Image (cartoon, rainbow, N blue to C red):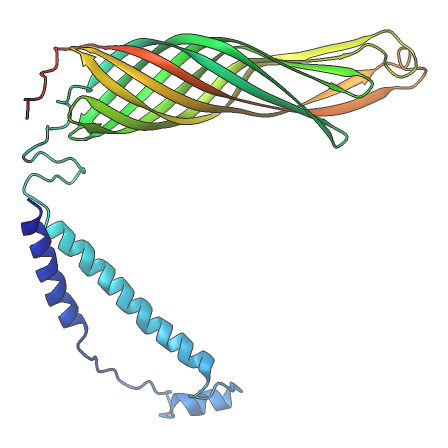
Length: 315
C-alpha cells in the first residue's frame, strides 16, 4: 500500500538532489575602485587572512546552511507530490480504509458522568520555612463535550464540574496550624486522540482548571500572649491541567473511559497581621505563600447524541 508513494518520493528526491549538487559559478566580489576584498580588508584594519580557521568556518557554515535549506524544501515538495489522491490540505484523509471528517463513531456532542479518586498536595512557605500537607478524597461529577473525528484522528473540547472533599493540613513550629480546602473543581480542556478500529481512542488533554479553594491559618498562642488568631482567605482560583486517557465504544452510542489528570492551581500569597493589643504592644506581621495541586484518576460513562454508529465489519 505504501510502496507507490515511497517510490515517488525516492525518485523525486534523487533527481532534485542531483540537480542541486551541480557546481555553481559565482563572480568574485570587488570594491568600487577595482581592488580585491583582501586589499579592502587590509585598508580597514581587518586581520582575517584567507587561511584564518574562523573565516573558513563561517564560509563553510553558510554553504552547509544553504544546502540544508535546499534539501528541506526538496523533501517537503516530494512528500506533498507523493500524497495519495485521498489526502486533503487540512490534514484529513478520505482514501481507502478511512472515513471523512465528521463521520466517525466518536464524532459529535456527548454528555456523561464520572467517579474517581483525588490526591492533593498543599505547601505553605513563611520566612523561608516550608511545610507540606496532603489529603485524598473520592470525586464525582459530570462532563459535556464535542468531538470531531477525521479518519484516525480525534479533535475535541470538553468541560466538566466535579465535587471533592480535600483538606490538606500542616503545622509550623509553635504550633501554627494551616488547612487548605477544596470543595469542588472544574476544567475546560482540549483533546487530541488516535482512533483505532473505530472502537478505541487514546488521547491527551489539557487546558484551564478552576476550583473553590480556601486557606485557613490558626495560631492558638500568638506572640505577646494575646487571644488566638484565625484567618481564612479563599474563593475561586484558576490554574492549568494536563492528562490523558483511553475511551472504548462499548455499545451503540455509549462509551466507557479511564482518565488521569494533574491539576495545578498556582500560588497565592496571604498577609497575616496581629494587632498591637493581641501581640504584646507590637504589630505582628507575616506573609505566607500557598501552593496547591492534586491528581485525579477516574472512570467515566458517556452518551453520544446522534444516529447510532455502524459497527466496523468483521475481519
